[in-house]
Length: 243
Image 1 (cartoon, rainbow, N blue to C red):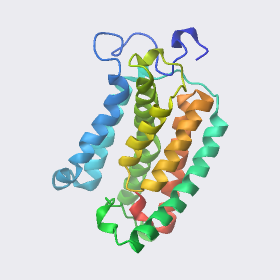
Image 2 (cartoon, rainbow, N blue to C red):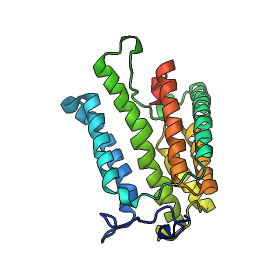
Image 3 (cartoon, rainbow, N blue to C red):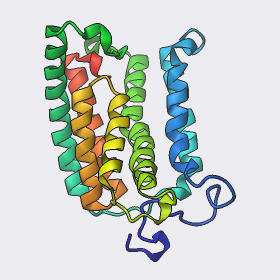
Image 4 (tube, helix red, strand yellow):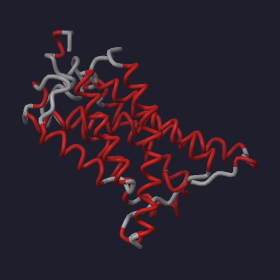
């Protein structure tokens, strides 16, 4: 980064706070997504106690709390590459929908549907959207557009990508990736999504955006844009399997 306090890294810490003392320096970047995934793994078990909405809300609140606790570790905001990020976000949702359709057709033709994980899918009746349902929809979008993009980008490209280049990841210049780090980030992200083909192509585009812009915030914007448009597509078409 241009600011000398960032030591040309997207991951440099910015001032005193919970990230500046003893402890693993990767924690601020990994902890939010780790909390999100941990609570996702037990989310269904919480339905009986909190309902689906309550369990999801608790997961978002916990993840957001961790994100804010470690906010001083976030890279400095930069505008560089924002237009590219927005453009990739728009292209990304088109590719995601098209490639998911291709994958579903191939899987059906090969009778492999039972071999792939599937999402539960949140459903909404937009013709009879009560106030509680409206709040539930807004909660779903807040996770989709705000919490998830921040948590994932801080982990994948804020930590994992540079850590795979050098264990002292804070010294790695923003946007620097090797062939192996590119492929590993792609593989890990893809493995976490049932839309395998779409995820592999989309995350490859995100890695390229990271390399070209050297700005993690451009990646966050691209991620949020894709998720926002995908969410709008889902509720417009009823493609609930996509979330």
